[in-house]
Length: 163
Image 1 (cartoon, helix red, strand yellow):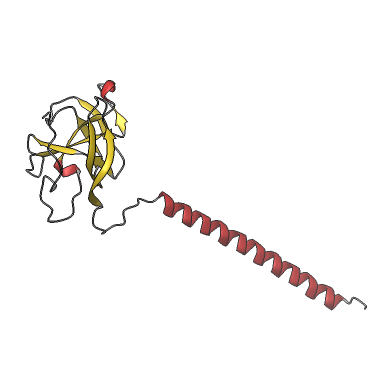
Image 2 (image 1 turned 120 degrees about the vertical axis):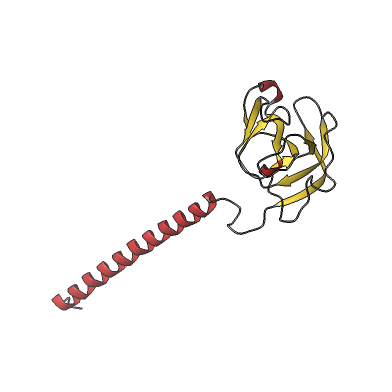
């Protein structure tokens, strides 16, 4: 079969079209990967969704001073200082930076900015002063994102025995 200039032109155009399509597919794939990656980096809690919050039993949490908890509230939370005692003037033992977190018991103390006197015991994601207690302490109730209409302290969550 004899190759003509017209056949070569069609063949070259076809090669260019296939090349453009391959590059477009590569770009689309890369953008898709970036979009998926961005979705993975986004916060787990979608805007407008009710906070995740449930009381879990038959678990085992052990704090830095040997207390063992078999029940804990597992809730979304705001970033916060974690205090050694239920008192805003108390040393900061750590910081809650991630959400959700565990809250195995509660106590009472000074009112937070919303007027609530409930404080929840937890372990910070980052240790602050008093490194021997590994970030364990309390946060004011406004930090713990309970679903609308849920009473504080959370129903059936035990009171911390040492407070």
